[in-house]
Image (cartoon, rainbow, N blue to C red; front, side, top):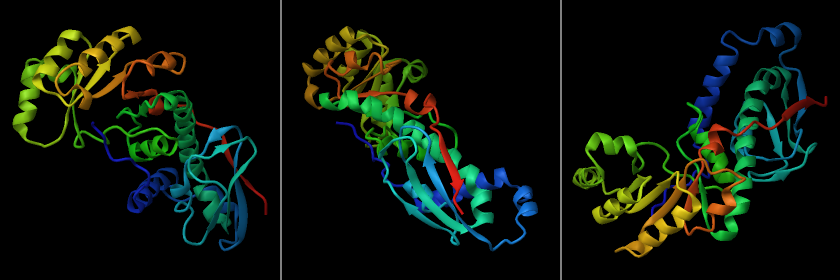
Amino acid sequence: MISYPQLKHLPEAYVKAKLADFLHEDLPEGDITTRSTVSDGNKVGQGEIIAAEEMVFVGVELLTRCFGEACTVQLNFGDGAALKGGEVIASVSGPFVDLLTRERVVLNLLQRLAGIATLTAKFVKIARPHRVKILDTRKTTPGLRLFEKYAVAAAGGHNHRLDLSSGILIKDNHLRSAGGVTRAVENCRKARTDLPIELEVDTFDQLREGLTAGVDGVLLDNMSPGEIVNAVQLIRNSERGDSIFIEASGGITLATLADYVVTGVDAISVGALTHSAGSRDIRMEFIQ
């Protein structure tokens, strides 16, 4: 079976570097408003980060690193926690200057991650009883991929390949460029990467040719549930059929997911987890 490393933790250096970039974007020459209104740069305050609506929270490794060394963060929930509106995610204390200048960047990221996690959890709830994995894709926001895949994993979803260097997935444009299924698979074998080869197919002719060529995984793209049932049967009855990873994808929504999780596939990949998730409402309120 094809599997990829799961992003359960974010590298500290990555988080710090990204936060530095985001803060520079928001205050390239400093926070003029805070600098003008807060005369005492050492004055200390406390704020609460609050879930303003129901959501699945993700962001422990962000909150513990985002406010600077002069601030203290007290977390009330862990990654993957289901929150009700009004619950306090964390309390933050430290210089007002730090809290004010970092507030928007932190909330933007938390809201984005909570949106992805909340949507992912809905898909997982339907798929889990059938032992079908919900996979993310590379359809992520440029510059936020690790954050977004971290949110998927924290909510019970599974990470597909992280990037183009992590795995082989032959898609339609690769087939056109290489000259067909057999040629594409043979070229991958010759490359000797030792990586499993997954093939995206949207016809049964492509599927049969891929099975003959000896692929390790198949992505059934834009097929109906009935077509997928027939494709799964064809794959499982082929040589090495029980070891071939079967993934379905292509416009599968929460409304249609129940029809797909019973088809016999191992996983369903959903680009919408990251490219269409709406942010959740998270606020920061000063209490002193």
